[in-house]
Image (cartoon, rainbow, N blue to C red; front, side):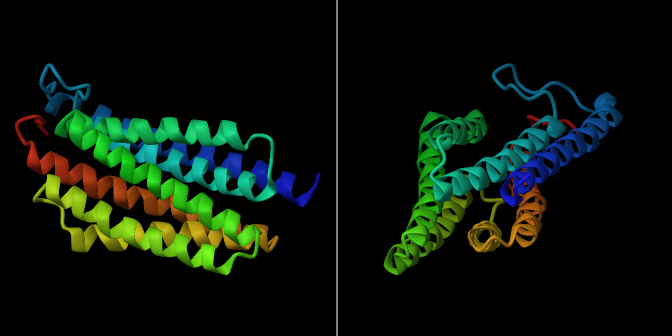
Length: 225
C-alpha cells in the first residue's frame, strides 16, 4: 500500500471515530436530558437543544473531512474531485439550512454564499500552491482572512449573543489548521498532515458549540432545557 493510500485509510478511520464518538456523547446527553426537554415550535425540525448541537457538530466535522479531501484531490488532480466538491456543497447547504431554520431564507442564502466562498478560497490556495503561484496563494489567504471577518460579523449581526471578536479567532484557527494540513500533505508529511486534520475536527466543535449556544440563548422559548 502506498503512503497516500495508507494516509487516506487512516483519514477515513479518524473521521468515523470522530463521528461515532460525537454521536455517542451527544446522544447520551440527549437521552439523559430527554425528560427535561420539551418539543420546540411546530415549524422547527429540532426537538431539543442537543439535536441542534449534534447537527452543528456533525455537519462541521463533515465539512472538515470533505474540505480536506477536496483540497487533496484537487492537488492530486484526481478523477474524484468533482464528486467530492459536489458532496462538499451539499454539506454547505445543510449547514446553511440550520441557519435558515432560525433566521429565515435570506439569512440562509447569505450564509451559504459566505460558506461556499470559503471553500472556493481553500481550493484556490491548493491549486495555486500546486502551480507554484505565490501571488495566487497570497490572494487566497487574504480572501480567507476577509472571510473570517465577514462571517463573524454576519453571525454576530444575526445574534447579539455572538461576538464577532470571539468568532473571528475561531474561524481563523480553522483556516490555519486546514492550510497547514494541506501544506504538509503537499510535502508528503502525511503524519503531520493527519495530526493537523485531527486537530481541525476538535476545533470545529468549538465553532459549532459557540453558534449553537448563541442560538439557544437568543431563542430561550424554543428550547426548554
